[in-house]
Length: 161
Length: 417
Image (cartoon, rainbow over all chains, first blue to last red):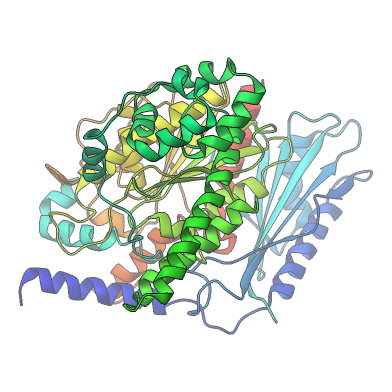
């Protein structure tokens, strides 16, 4: 068999495998993964100092999952949730210290994920065990009074019709 | 580089596969090779200047557009973005509005003009093109030689997309199917504190902006979920036809000349946006072969505050980084890219792997990678991991999506400070 044919065969096989190796149609619903994200944000906010106030940036958004994590039918009928909000800290609070202490304050059930970008803003990325929810908490340097930006991303869920 | 040199056959075979980037559809049929198009245009160029454009009557302009579209293309190719910016600034509001209406394809593609003007012009252009598409579709349906399902599907897909443009649901910054280029904008130009460019890699085409899992999803998520204190404006850029997967090693995406040529067009687009948004920090997020587009753009004079190479091929031999630009690279441990990174023989391959850029910051993509048992499974896994780095799906590419978001926030903060 000519080398070109071998390459074509391997290529087609690889692509076919990559397309059929997607997640199964079963799995959590979008409502479930959104609720998990909301619970995670609630826990993070509860770990903030007394006197902090949380303001959501609108409702959780629903974004179609990509082809890679959707069902074999493609991204239609799937979505992940993104939740955004802001915590305004009480007057004399030190945002960097609060962020540094947050993993301890949240305790077991949360794991710290590495942040790949080294920036001047204080930040921590936390994963809530068993949920696939990842939450970024970042200092908003330009703001006065001191505030933290919160961003939570869920796993992929099925949108029930 | 050494690994690739030791296994050149494997490297080339992997290259043929890796550039598949899997998840996106093949190119639209309406994209012609750039050299062919440019040769056709050059053969019939009629001299016309921006000043002519501003002084001609509606009837004269309409006649020019109909008689010599190549003349308008010549203006686009020969006008520096800074010159276009100055020219536009000297026009009256009435003249500007008239030009948007009379020559939307020119105003919608003229680098250096304000982004919102280009979007408005392309919205007008979309309405006009929709009218032509409807005529074409009606003719095809009634023609005795029925068009193929694929042809009809492509036209219907374009019609659906341009309808969204005409309705203002999609912001089109550039649309030139003849040249195979499209740039979609997301965000509010008036509020932006930073610019994000997103450059898709192999198999990107105009059609991949129009399907169910569009190449704009990464940029759209960034705009929608930017830190409210640092809103961004994003451009997903297909500057010119990109390599399409092929088993022909001499002419497929492993041929580095295709992405290199697109780099010159990308540089021009970047310079135009720089002219429209002076002083704003810029981040270029480039996937796979898109990183050669970014590298070639730098060699053609484009400048970025930062570049982020996501499963990038890197650059061809001779490339040098730009002082003052921050470089980031991410790829999975088993990314299929790693089988050929740093291998180049003339027009085949890319001699400088992404992690070989001097001073580049290596970013962990945060994937949980599992050992695979067979070579086929390993390649399939490597391809899947490769494609995930261009996904706007937070459940598949959340670490990098959030890292890029954080970087954009930081760049805006540094810029304002």
